[in-house]
Image (cartoon, rainbow over all chains, first blue to last red; front, side):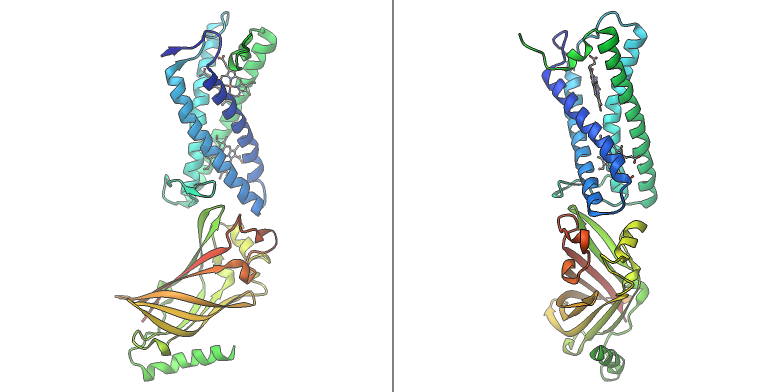
Length: 182
Length: 182
Ligand code: HEM
Ligand code: HEM
């Protein structure tokens, strides 16, 4: 494994982190908003955009996990108690897990509900499951529940960053920002 | 409507003249389905109630005829909210237009067990000339007629108002029928 610059994430890791973070936060909002709309062309459009963006997150996840497997992140700032380091590590892996499972559950739900995912309305993706209404409903619940867990963890993750930034002032956030080259 | 009656009556009189004609439609084995395209995704639907009067003699198609009457309120396309919307004013407006109908004018032999039915399709009070190409195959259950009819939904005023935009729900809807006659 390549050791990264001791104090910063590599540029690809940083770009993937922020691109995916913005997409995922957008997808939380879009998902919650669109599912409560009455049936309308707008709703069908938003559902399609949600699926396309969600599938892009899945594709980016593959890149990101590949990069992560080959590049060790910088060591955590010194002075953190061991239990915090453990929780940080666990949270990060849980986030990686949910970044995979959430879009995957969406794809499975769509397949089981009989709706092929057609990227940008042009390229049909394979159906992972045969159409089965009851299974589709179950997977919808799975997608929802995984999303609430995901939102909870992202919340925890952001609170930890805030704590580092404003209470510990150890510059943790800088590690995930492009290095200012002086 | 008068010539419809004439055709129906002819259908009942015809067998005395043409012993070989197929004309007893097996409703339990026949169905009318359709595929619409929403944001590039093919979405299936069906009409569960319809009647069909068919007089079909594979050797003498010039005397053949078909009248198919669909109960528009029997439409379904994947979910109660969708079905209720389809019955509403913007789509089939089933309160005002409880029936849609196809009446053949003539049936032509195309060869290779394929035929074309020219006739008039009326939906929501709008009538257009259409050509239905279908195949006739004998099976143990009887003669199986399988045909396709792509239509422009907007030409019939189906899916108006906010739904008129063909970039969300495509204009072309493919109707398929599978009719078994004995
Ligand atoms: C990282 C990716 C994704 C995130 C963060 C996400 C998030 C969400 C959220 C927060 C909801 C609303 C849940 C609720 O109403 O309680 C939702 C609903 C939905 N998501 Fe996703 N989603 C993602 C990927 C996908 C994918 C890839 C698909 C399909 C291919 C998909 C299909 C759906 C559908 C169809 C709904 C609506 C379910 C309903 O009818 O309520 N999602 N999503
Ligand atoms: C959906 C949103 C987000 C997801 C899924 C996410 C995911 C992750 C993951 C998996 C890591 C660990 C990287 C590794 O070491 O392999 C990470 C690190 C980091 N994230 Fe996020 N993140 C999100 C949003 C945010 C936000 C909004 C912020 C800023 C407020 C942030 C700031 C950071 C920082 C500073 C690190 C580096 C931590 C360290 O140095 O160990 N993230 N993020």
